[in-house]
Length: 373
Image (cartoon, rainbow, N blue to C red):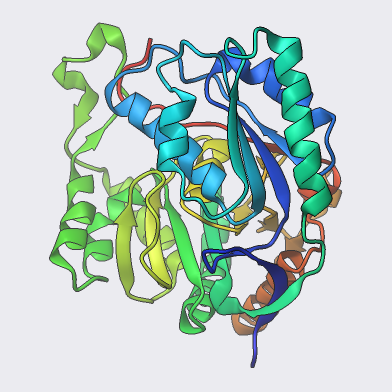
């Protein structure tokens, strides 16, 4: 079967499933101005967050890399960076780090002598881009899809039903040379030993084996205490992880990526998943994903601001938020349902709105690592 979708070609060869103009704040202090610009320009979306000021070390690096990755995402036709002027996360540094594969510009509130001037300048730039946005989609192979997959809050009794369907979906995508970025959740981490056996690369193997020692997020008052480290998983946690492992299919794993790392070619990858769905989807977008699948036993009330998120529900019962579900699993054979999920995915990739998009339910958020001010 020829799996195809209709998208937008970028100058670096990547393909967008959406065609937004991203207005990106470098720091929380410019978030209000960023929103004002985006709200007044067609096709524009505001990527605002609470970071960028007085950040240090790894936490600052994650913020910078996430913003570089988001601005580079193929679902953005263009990116406008909006700064204050005195932040740690300077616009000039971001501009040097972002590949020049699309219209790109940066402006600052202090440099332009105030918020009003910055809003006017930003709107002027974004409106010019909006006039030039390519509206016509072209046909591409599924090889141009980079699919983020995250499963959360799945009830144990439903895992056996869900895992075979999603596992087959992942395997079909990988077999047809799509890129799949699988979220490695806290509940899947205890399967580190099984995951390490699915790669022939010693470096990647060791990345999975390092999950043996889990480290909780540190706070200032206990940053150097040993109670953060718990060196073993319980039998219950390991049993749950073994069930959840089947969600990832049987394909070989190419790499285990850190936040904002880009996959090196097609295939199956893993990336750390936060307990916060928006953080995870934002991280997947910063790694280059152009579409996502979210599998859950509960209702999903928000997704990504720039990734269309196909919501797959594990329950067959009618829920209060029925209109926020894109695909509800049935009693059909796993292979049949996997094909249906991929068919729906290709339709969404071609422009069909997801349930979350219809209600404009999308956010952007940056994970924190280590201590923060």
